[in-house]
Image (cartoon, rainbow, N blue to C red):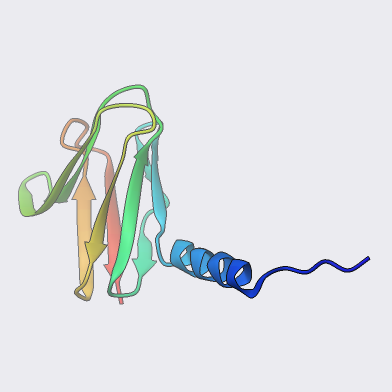
Length: 108
């Protein structure tokens, strides 16, 4: 038995897979950002998804030195937000409500 898959379907699957590879997701669970650090190429979009039952933030910088680049509010389970990183560098971030929660994005 032979299966015929339309070329367009293969192209959609391939490009969807490539897009996912360039769009890492950071889970917020048990008061941690995981994985961290995350290494991406310039132009990549990083998504944070809250898996805890309470609100968290993803705030750029460090608790005593915010950069203002992003300040995402994730109110509860399933909430997610994304940021696209266009410039090379190291981007630390933290949760404004739970300042011991910290993470880092490294853009190559």
